Image (cartoon, helix red, strand yellow):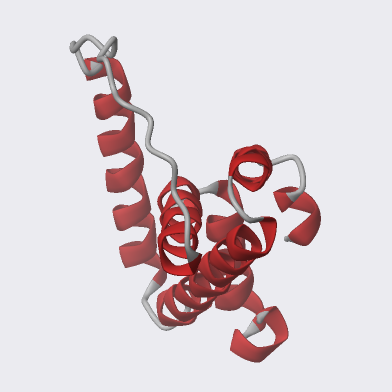
Length: 128
């Protein structure tokens, strides 16, 4: 899982935040977001491993179809909005910004799904 995270988009986001904010604060925020994501993925994978196979296949197919529908539908909106850039300082604002940036961008990512699959097939403690 670690090797799959290296070229990920969150690495570049963390690098960019580290150049504008205190790097140690960014590291704490991103690290704790990854810990929460792994805990969620391992917990979800352990629960998925308890379900019957046909339910997992049905839910997976439904989520895949919903994702395809959302991609085909598109947003239809204009993304050219003027936004004012604010400087974030202090531990808690930087920590929260880094945590939320990684937490939101990693939600449903390939590595989270892979972690859940490993937990479903190999068990909780060997995956964590």
